[in-house]
Length: 312
Image (spheres, rainbow, N blue to C red):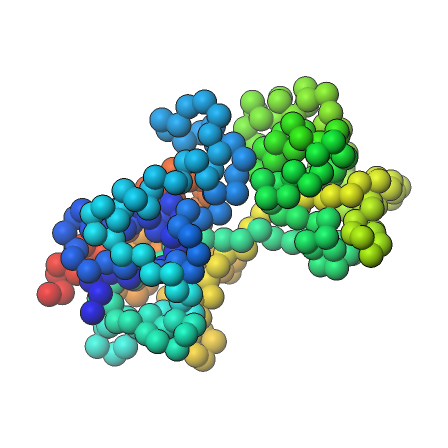
């Protein structure tokens, strides 16, 4: 039986693994269906992680983390967890997509979130054929071309700046005339010579042909419309919480959740179920920053150690 099962291998899960193993738990496994690192590995530039100076990408930031954690005994199992449940005796069951399962005394869920779709016509039809949610992944395909970015938060502005280095022009489409981002980032966007702000507007439809996207039609608050010829549209309008592993056979959640599908936790990352902890982007009121997710993972691991020690 595992002392602690960690579900998810992003900053929260890796930090939880580091603290749990260094803190004395002997049998700790992190379940991550892909390579560890999390969603941050798709970010083109990190400026606000303490100690990371100069130009560093999300991938560069995360590369050393797994090695550091595994040095203290953290095991990484490349498996997809489909459900976490709890038996009457308090033991957690970790069910996996291959039909196998593991038992654990405690669980830290760090499954994060995934980018939302904006919901405009053609978004799903052209997803992967001109519509993308990852500038780092797909920006190179539009080198020297014009693209559109949908959104007005930190991610949208940062990725617009990244694309502006590659593309001839970036149209930044936002439903308001103000942005929710760091003032320095907003200033950089406004002063970028090849970023055009298309504000008080929402995308109505992405159009294209058999080859992919050819343009996007936007509707302004006053009802007027504009067609913008672009072969690429990047969508950054928030994230959906990856809470599927907590859904039980009867459709209920294992622990208390918010109406937005986030896990309710206290300051110690404790959920409503003893021995179950949540950390990172999936927990209630998460700031969705790498440094915060790492802090969550550390707190959750410390509490998991105390829980396991108290139930020996």
